[in-house]
Each structure stands twice: as C-alpha cells, then as structure tokens.
Length: 365
Length: 165
Length: 104
Image 1 (cartoon, rainbow over the protein chains, first blue to last red):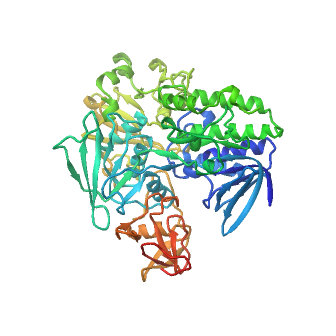
Image 2: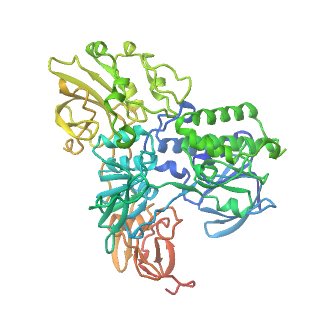
Image 3: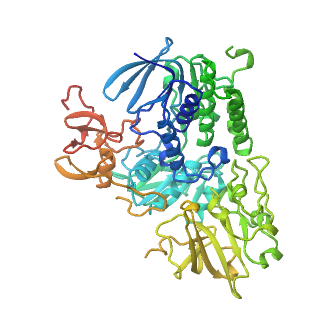
C-alpha cells in the first residue's frame, strides 16, 4: 500500500491549489482525479476571472488551469494519479480507488476532499430527450472538443453559469434564442447579463420551460411566464423552435465520499445542498478529512482556489510539516476569503457558512 | 430594469456618465458597472490612475474622468466587458466608440457594420476605424467604430454576422 | 458540427480515428470521447431507456448521470461521454439495461 502525508481527491481549482500549498509546505502529496487531465471545470472557462490579482483576476480560467497544472507537475513531492476514482474513505485513513483498471489502497495521514459539484436537473416533460444538456456538458463539448451542441439553443437559468455559457455559445457561432429565469430577477452578475443582452439575446425573467418537444431529439420547447407566486400565467404559453435546451439551474456539492466517511453533514440551501460541517481551517468532524471548493459550498472558482490553499496549508500544519511561514499564509488566505465574500453578492454564502461552521468549543484541538 | 432585463436604465447610466463638459473634451471611459461584485482589474490596469485603488474588492469603481485619456486599456482588462471609451469630439458629426469584442472573425478596418444598442437592437451603421488586439489584451480585442454622433451614448456592440468576410 | 473559428480557443485536433457506429463507419479525432465524435457526426441519440424505450442522449458529459450508456466492443453500459475513442472501436446503441458478462 502506498503511503502519503496528504491525499487530495479532485484536481480542479481547489484540489490543485491544495496540492501546491501542501507540497510547498513540504508534505508528500498524492493528487488524484477521475479524469484523464487535471484542471476540473477550469479547462472550459474561457472568460476572464473576477476577484483581485491574488486570485488571478483578469486571467481566463483555461490559462489559470494551465499555470496551476504546470506548477503541480513541477513539484517533485506531489504525485498525480489520473483516471483514478475514489471509492471509499475509511477511518483507518485508507482510501480505496479504482486507478485505470486496478483497485488499490492508499494510506494518508490527512485527506482533502475537493470533489466539486454536479449539475442539477429540472423536472419537465421531455427532459430526457437527446438535446437537453447540462450547461457544463455544453461547455465541455464546445470548449474542450470544439463541437457545438446544436444551432438554436434555449438556456434555462440566468445565474452566472447560464449567462456565461450563453455568451460562450455566441462565441462558438451558435444562436441563443432566449435565456429563461424562473425568478423575477437575474441571479448572475449583471455585467454578464448586459454582455449577452447587447448581443441580442433576450433574458426572460419570471419565465420557465413547460416541456421539451421532439420524437428522437429536441425540436422545440414550450415556455410560459410565471406570476408572482411562480404559477403559470394562462395565455402566456409560447413555442420556441430550438434543437438544444441547456439547463443551468444550479449545482449540488458532490459529497458522496463525505457521507460514506461519516463526516457530519448538514443541509444548507445557501451552499447548494448537503455540506460537511467544518472548522475555520476547513477540517470536517473527522479530524483526518478536510474539504475545499464547491463540495464545501457552491461558490465561485476564485474562492474555491483560496479554500484549496487554506485546506492544504492547514493539513500540512496539522502534521507539523510547515516549512514556509504557514500561519501568515493561512491568515492571508482567510482574509482573502473574507474579502471575496464581503459584498452584497456574497451575502448568501456568508449566511450559509455561518450555519456550516463549528463553534470554537466544538473544534478539534 | 437592469436586474430584470440586463439593460441599464437611464438613471443607472446617469450615475456613471462623465459630465457633459468632460465628454466634450474628447475620449473618456464610461464604466457601466452597477453592481458590487468582487472585482478590481479596472483599477489595477489603469495607467493614468484615473480609477482609484479599491479599498474593498467589492466596491464600485471610483473613477475620475479628469485623469482619463481614453486609452482603453481598462476596456480590454475588465472581466465584465463593461467599459467603453467614447470620443464625442472625433469629428463634427461622428463620434468614436472603443468597445470590447471577443468574437471571430474580427471586423476589418474600413468595413461598415451594424451597430447595436444595449438591448441588442441595430440602430445605425458604423465604420470600423481600428482593431486593437495585442497579446497584452489577451484576446479581448478593442474595436474602434465611428458612429453618427447622435448615437454615441447608445452604441455598445457590433452586429454579429455583419463582420463575416 | 465542429467549431472552425473561435476568438479565444485554438482546437488542435489529433490524428483521425475510424470507428463504427451501428455498422456505419465514422471518423473522429484522437483525444475525443466517443460521445463528442458521435455528436460531431450529428448523432445525438445514444441509447433507449430500459422501460419505456425512450431515446437518450448525454446530459452531464462528466460520467455521472448514466444517460449516455452504449455498447462498446461488445461491452454494455460504457459511459461514452468520458470514454476515449480508439481506432477500430465498435460502438452500438444500447437497448435497455446491459447484462454483465458482455451479453446485451
């Protein structure tokens, strides 16, 4: 059985930054990812990131991914297993994995779970027809493989993902017929909304999809307006000719492994679903398991990266491995998180985190 | 209303518009950023110091039009593509708009293209005067388009497809 | 349909790979998933659901949702949204649940 100081599960923005932080602190690190390349969702983010220069603001997600991956690959004390899916995490600090075609056991003193989130589905007749995709799937198809999902797209959801993917569809030469949003207001950043609007894409708030129409694939979508109680406005039904329906209706933390490892989980709507209870250093109720990124609460990639750094540093420190000035680095990471979440758009996250945080007397020694 | 349509209202725009006097003096940035989000590359990229350093990363830009020379570096650096430069002194009856553009192919200098307002409606034709796409702009090109002066405060985008060769 | 021109990305496609889909010969590129290559060829329907035999395509493209299961080289329940294309692969529409041991 292979042994490591710290094993990180998930090579997206949080996992990569956790690996770099833990590795720089001198830990022997294993980073695993079920895909055949590192980067997670960053590899499809063609837009410039927000935040400050500390979180690479103004740099495109794809380029941040490349920088982080290069850094990880240059660290001799960080080992990477790709095509390696975590199966079970046990209290004797053993992780079982399926690595390519082999089952293996990996022992580590600390684990950082950075498994991200999965896309939510929306219930409507015809939602299983080919041509109905999650927004992440559309991004993968377009921005990783260079293939368009269709010619005329209906986007469901005007959060950041719905708005950004709509813009990316336009960049790929695809027509976006409309963006529907059930709530009366646009949920994503208004600058994203304005840039798809001026390109001619209507954003219909208080609107939803009633059904997808088609025999072997999507041929049309029936939509309607909603009143202030989210009930269908009679007479507002309309049929749009589209060949693709893209769902951007939110993400849920991928917390399966944390459930199985018996971490204490709690449902917090503001964080996207069930998340692990954690202390100020992102350590869960199981002292050998840390969390970072969307699995800790669905949020922006910039905060996921800072959380990864904090968890990586904290895990290394708990092993007495801190070669760098770990306390300063940890408090800087915490300050960055506070700053990123300080504004009005961070209110939901702040509310959610307050519910997920252990009290001081509940924290590990 | 901006939060319902994605199109800023006249009141929203009034709050970010440089004064008539400043607009009359020539090229100046108009920062159409109305929501506090954690983001500051406009301030860190401005070589003139016209956009003040942020105290809180969630602040709205604190912009001094008197210090702005309309260089458009912020236009390429704003992650929200929310900054435009308007030169109302460009000629007697035309104005020059510098806008961020991330579509392929880029328009050709000299081409006449449809120009769109904030709602995506074509309101006039404009002439492409210059296309800036240096490596430091990192694939956010800044397109200079000459438009009838009466539309200087409306034109914010180019018709996609109008630029097809 | 493949994207030919993009303002931000350059698509460097690897060497071409031939594979068969329900007996029809198709071409994709090295590094692509089976689902991506099928999609580029205009094929969205990947399987029929187990009970109602409704057409299914891919949904998540990250190997999580099980909407894209196909029979590949005789093996059922292959998640074609994450499985890479290999020269000479035989890809078939899956009808309902696949059986372990290779029988469909």
